[in-house]
Length: 487
Figure 1 (cartoon, helix red, strand yellow):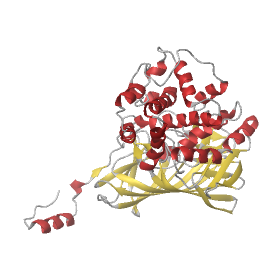
Figure 2: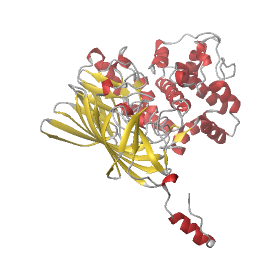
Figure 3: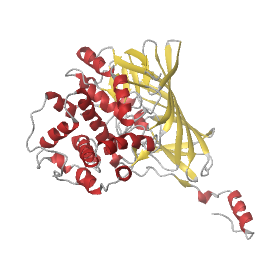
Figure 4: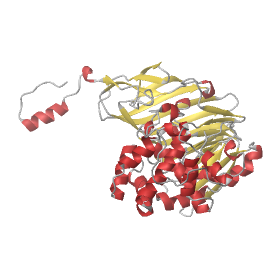
């Protein structure tokens, strides 16, 4: 609210801008960012530009101690704001001054600064915190995975709150510096480029930097004892792959797959355009989970992904996410098809390239493998609901939608779209509706009916794009491709 002054127009405007807001003009930021799938995720009232995380982790006890420095800009006059954190905060400062704080809900750290924060102002928030991530249960589970020699933060759609305070939603991306101190003889792996290491008093510190915008769930941390390989791409990007020393029988297959990261990424550049980040690689820790995840620049792979031998297809899937999911991220979690449909289709294209079945043959196989009464067709990839966000239909029916699009508009327009979209939306967020409009613009065709059928109808489509009545004879590798995204 501003005081009313009777002065000439231009002068009046400048005076209004100069009058400070009163206490009544400051309101709390929302405890959620506004995603209907997950109302508690993220927060309102500010936008983060950078996270600086200075951590110390003790593998023997699972104790993590941290100081997070968060650089942000307010998007409203803020009297109070929230961060998402499951560990226990001991001190919070806002712009250098101590701030009051309390916890509420599942993971809400409510912070009240010493003075209101005006809209558009730069803000520095420092949070000191500690705890054992494996003992933190949010929504009834823990996202932190313990290993025999350390721990790993990698999960979707949530992982950040177990190891650092954040605005935990893909809509608020930021750059990162992650500095981790661990006992000598232990390594700390994170995203981006390793800037330096140093050792003193029995502890080694690893300093990692992600210089491009990154969603919170794509930030990863792995502490343990690893065999590490390094290389550079033809264009000079650093490559770092890491494998737990105790992978056992899966070690050879894991290496045989992940060591093809550079080859797969260079091929994906021919499909999706220039690689969007400044490093690449992958890591395989000794965890019992079975999924893989597109953690930015350094995908996470569970050893079970390689239990049946090499699995380059899953490496292609997670690398494809660097364009579709990491550089271009979902606006809301209902838009998950933009991540998983495209990453799954990239596996079909890789199979086509390798002579192991064309994308059309794989589409025919998947379509015929699911009869009309299969619940597979009742999941709508374009809006699957939070309970079905990672259902196989989002992946495989999502890839079927892209094959139907390819058949409808032809290869020239189709591959122009695949390459143009991640450049148009680089480092931002997008919705399914935006992609549909983009595809229509590039192809010059009306595609609403096609996408309604393949992304939103809850019955088996009967449109051109698949050609078989029964399950065709197919190499075992086709089923492997269909399962390689399994979570």
